[in-house]
Length: 325
Image (tube, rainbow, N blue to C red; front, side):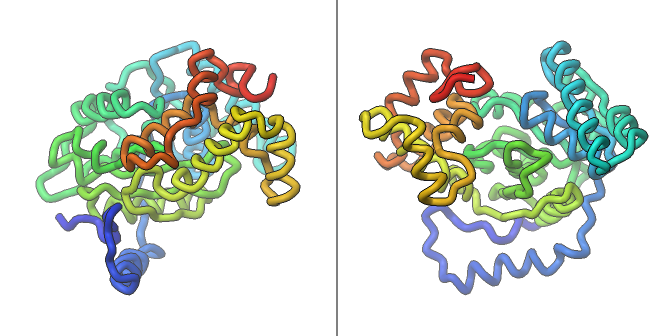
């Protein structure tokens, strides 16, 4: 089985033409590739997980097994999905019958064994390498074993910063070719982008089918090499971190920092408000990945960010971050 094309080393100095040809080789098959997914699985019913489940069932029409350790969280989040879809009905974007059918396709479960018949699973658990690697080891034992020389069920991670090659290395060699990054943006039903990140081990077929599924969800894909932070968070998180440094140094208030970026730089949301929305614990986890991977002081987490997370001031989800909610 061939390794996925278009993988550029973090330290690579490959000629631009070589990289372009590699990307073009895979892109030539994009339009004709089908995702082939019959049953979809999501692990983690948090903000990202429920959003991924929503687009899979309401846009693609897939049956979705949604797994979380908390039955209470599952019930709450599926009810939330129902309320979001009800707004779509009110706006004429779907019928009540379509809404009901989408909700009926969601199967909640508290055991990973419920995913056994899924042919595409996305994990959306905490951005913690230890948690994700252990989850992938468990999923390796749950999903159907790939036939010799064939691609088995695809196992995707919604990680926003952790190298996929490391994640793929936590499963068996036969399974590693089916591991890929599928980084959705928050909120999933609204944001149009999905970053797709092949590990060194990822098969071409897995890469192309993942991109095809993202397109079926109505998303535009951006392919990234397996570098820490990929594209989005390699650019975004240092900016948010610097805004927090400015706040910690007393340069300006949260409101003024955000106003400068909104009105002066035409950002739709200021960096501190955005950090609150993402979750300060998630921001800290990503900055730590970047700092640990590169060792560059520019990625060192802002001390104030560390303190806020230690205090439990995690942003909007906690009712307090750089702003009160």
